[in-house]
Length: 334
Image (cartoon, rainbow, N blue to C red; front, top):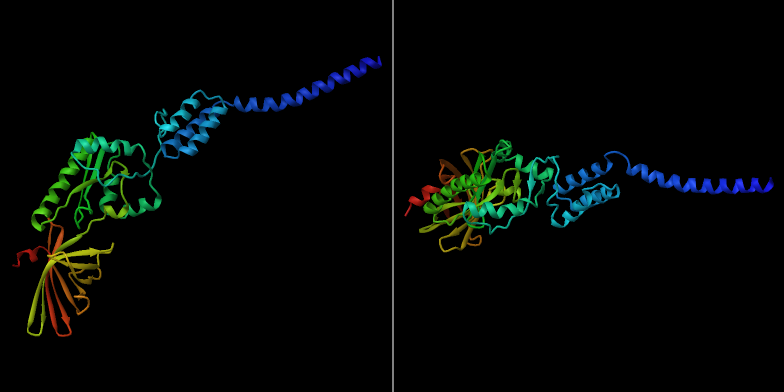
């Protein structure tokens, strides 16, 4: 009888020990058997993948694999190809995206449309700061709010080709190619007018497609990067005529440099039109500071084709004055 009791106790101990082990194992099994958990991990990986966060996506896919989710292995393999081939009906929303595109991208609309596709696959959600900056540009803000189900594009004059800026937008097209072609033609037409009238070599480039931006926020601002300038410097009985191009400096477009027809920087100065009126103040320093002064600058008519004002300025110096004509009207002076 005593032997039977000891045997029963031993069997109970073994049973309890195996029960502890089984309890631990069954906890993992119960986790694996939670309905839909593997799929939830997988879909979290898809969202990370589409947003461009491959490392985070891999963590989610490995969790899905631990749940024996049937799509996990293929998803992990696709990580090597920038998350290509991931199939999911879930859409990942972002207000705008960004991806880097080389400045050298050029050619026909067909060539640009083909070249841009590989870069679009690498896009990532734009930061809230970038979105805020471009939203503050009314032209871009309106374009971004256009129908997202249709194709749209923005072309702008490449600042590396000339000191100027211009933007032309298209929207409501059935295909990306059509949107690219329309925006390119509009920008090219404006660049040709600028080139013919001011002797520049402005060229256009694609800067945005649908909800994806390719460059920094300053690219989407419009300003007259440079304009003609003719000036007479009167000092005593001597009069010096200077003609060239004024290049605006900085985001606020207040400071400028005057480069003469020989390509030499001869003056630097600053405009101040207050809150955008037609009359303002101007200061100018020329010939390494040998001639400088302050005066009044006026803005006259606006040339829509060249996107700049014509105007005049009168600057008082210690020994005389500087008389200025700038903008398209300066081209009429011989």
